[in-house]
Image (cartoon, rainbow, N blue to C red; front, side, top):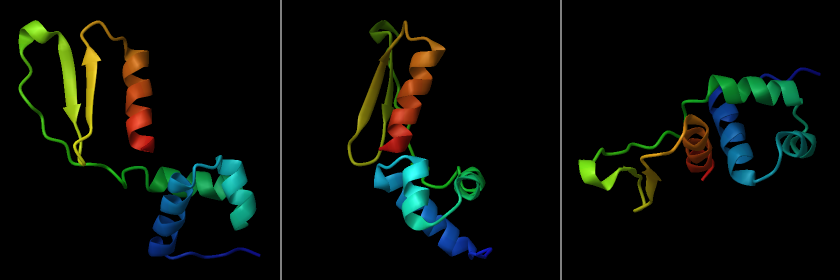
Length: 96
């Protein structure tokens, strides 16, 4: 049977999934939600959970990029990082 969820319910389910630490398949099995449906929910609400950041001036000599997040979290990346490294850092920060 098809279940219609309100926007608020979908947001709550996506937040529960993201904070659960489970794989999508495991979470969906336990919650009784089709994996494809959860994929749609996650895509629709991908922008949710963004964190406001402040850009600080970085000295050119340091050769690093620093990202300061809420809760005093700070991410520093060396000047010689590559795109793949940056994407891994972004995914890790978004998952936290």
